[in-house]
Length: 98
Length: 487
Image 1 (cartoon, each protein chain N blue to C red):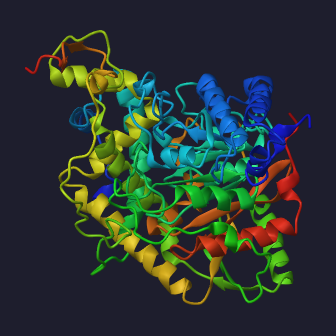
Image 2: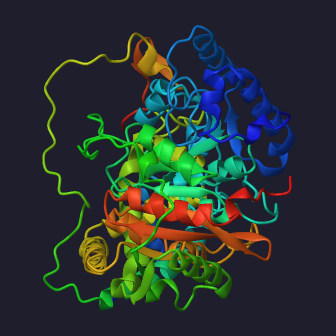
Image 3: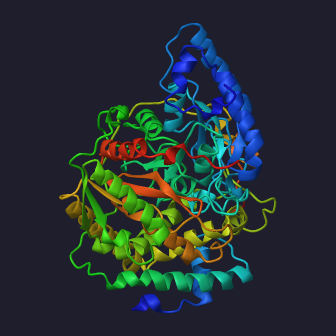
């Protein structure tokens, strides 16, 4: 199975980028080693016979839980900004986009 | 009464009502206890001393005026630091949320306050609940009160240690793959993971939302029932909370297991489970048989795949749930804002998250990425179905499943932390209840080499009553719940 294929460091770097997590050079090497061992272990699920077995995304059989469209109390004034480290006036200050 | 901090949650409220003991003197007795022992244990991240004293005085005032007091009047509760408390910082033991002060209370906190309990502080945990030892906390490890060289279990290690060290009367933890039961077992507490959907998750900082539940960690089964009665019940703010009538779980505390059918899964007593972990549990089952229960061997063949399936699902959900931490609206934001949006966020997340959190986010992203989605994530969800089917089949013939909570005794701090896979293996006996959503409870069942061993009792969905009855019967006929660590 492809599960036991060794994942190169370049691929770990790419996935980390997708996950928006910077890795140091040293971490790239350690993580690559660890991930290969962990994924090799995970790949044991390949052998399980799951033909025609449905998926369990969730243990409860809930579908479309609705509530009435009523206005509830929400945070007031500057309350939503209180935990932001950079703000300007009543706005969150974001880094530049491009 | 020099040691009023020893009172249980079931004993205290009547004394506060009758003014035999004031909530404030009880609170001070616990605060002094914390001052004396927490240096050795490090159960707490934050102590909300002032807020707690104010609350205690309000409760005493109500008592003096003869006003009606709630079922937890004066009870001092330690809360795991991933449950939001209005005005008290909630860190998830992460640098990412080191200074995060929630603007609202979790539903369970609202319910505790409405029942006149006192929140004393926030307990240490594995960062974002990702671990089984409480060693991955940004604030440093918690130590096992029974032996400070050993881990207290995790991820709710601070809550479990605080309760057995009598630094709180009861505590709340959360359980995604064993995070209540594991530390309860390692610290000699009663710990319950309720059926998925029984307790509102509103205000619980999400790690793996389809697996986790908030639950009680206590010194006695009675306190567990009492706390569960307060925190359970439908909440419209959590769409996965189930609409069933609220229950008073105290009514299940009957010392009687006549006719109870116990299933002992072969897989819970097989390879990889140490003798020291098995023996006390088998002795405990023998005890239950003396009181009229019967046992039979059962099998959960899909358990063999439970651990990888659990980790794939948990990591996948984590990669999505933790995507919100960008440092913009809250959370760690580095002074260095150099670079574009992507670069800044990636830097905030490298510095804000510890190694295990980053490992799980990246692996989860991998399992959900094009080309691997089917092989890992979808396959794991199918295995989840297989385990559910095994549970449904087994529970046709038995009322409860019993096995050890943990496959090994508490181990040394630092012993496994460098080998993630070795650490993951510790969760083998606890993850099935999360994958299936079934309720599971760990109750103290003895000691080996001076360290506690917990017995795990798994029940049918929403049958917490039977779990409590079985645990209560065992507890009332043994002395293990009376033992305290030498502190």
